[in-house]
Image (cartoon, rainbow, N blue to C red; front, side, top):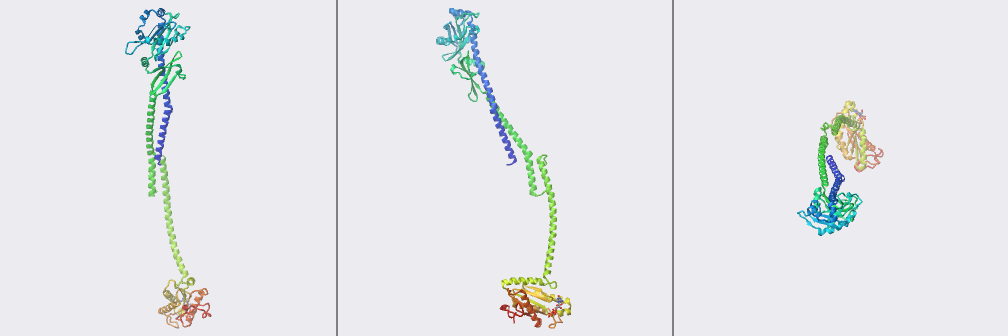
Length: 568
Ligand SMILES: Nc1nc2c(ncn2[C@@H]2O[C@H](COP(=O)(O)OP(=O)(O)OP(=O)(O)O)[C@@H](O)[C@H]2O)c(=O)[nH]1
């Protein structure tokens, strides 16, 4: 995985973690905070509704207070004078005060006068007295007992809500006293108002908060100490309810449906906040990545390209071109410094190598000289310096070798011992140096006559030569001996002192055998020597053969293979 990919993955991971953290904080901190504000707002609103209902109750109570402490009312409750009603309580009076119910009760709770009206929105009024008066009187009459006549006159009142044909009626009751506020109490004034949809709508408009009401009995009242009931309906609405109690008696449940503006606002803030955060993170990540690529990746790739080209060219005089004044630049400088060291080491190595090559060349030359010298030494150690033929040392090795091989293969081994006749006389007559020259001439003849590579001509003694012919049988050897004799004669090397011919002659003794364990090389050479001796004794300038035996005396007795028998 490249550095760039790793960095991208890391930045992405950090971005995701940041966004998740932001979402988590929004959910666990911001949302709950907004929700709490929303609940407080809901409580405040439903409290406003309750306060408005109570204000409505107080308004009715003030009016009742006004009418109950009025001498005309005091007289009316006792006399029942219709003049009082006609003068004061016509339907418009109800409308002006906003009342639907007006009752004047005697001390026993029976109505002296009472009316129930309904005022529809389209105008006019509906008289519901006959329909509901008895029911209203029956519902309200029991409230008289709540008035404490021992209390201050201002506190001698009661109010509440009763249900009339399913509609809540908010009312206030006070005892009727004289205008100066003293008794005795002559009866009760009750004014009431239908809490119908129209009135609730009017109250809602006044407090700019829609709400609804429903009657509750004490049994229905929830146990919650603050009587609030807050319930989330959905994402956009919240229901807030509260019990409206009058004089400690639960009477109504007011409910307001509130829009969840705060939550929606919080949701929007969260959404746009997270979106902005993600956007900023993305922009920041892209910027960081671009900077990282420009400041780190690009110089690294440049350094890598330089290293690759230097490595491929194997030219350590080249240098990396990154000149940054940072860690990568430092790396480049270190690399260049290393290249400098490699270059100087390389130069030194090349110099040492050239030196070694030169020394090696010299060693080779010396080796060549040594080989030549060795070869010359070998040649000198194995050859006679005068004639160039093999010397006795080489001859003995050759004989041993041939004897061993032929003893295994069963082939014949033939030797010839050649000796120049009357050579002492030659030296005496022509000088030692001329003798040396004639020796060389004879050696050349011998060497030229031998045809096989395995044959060898060696200088055996002063003017004596031994020829080794492995694998050559005695007949062929005799032919070779004849050839040598003739060639020596044919050379016409003047030898005036020779008693037999006026030129140089040679005598040759031949011996041949298939090597066996009961014979030795010495036996073979001795046989050739005997043959030579016989030739010398027989007049020289000739060749002859002798069979191989351990001694001269028993040589004739020794059985010799037929094919190796010397010719008669
Ligand atoms: N010039 C020369 N003479 C040599 C060399 N080696 C040996 N001689 C001589 O060869 C002669 C050999 O003589 P002898 O052994 O008496 O034999 P011969 O005179 O050849 O007589 P026969 O062998 O019996 O025919 C000696 O006089 C040696 O001095 C050599 O390297 N150069």
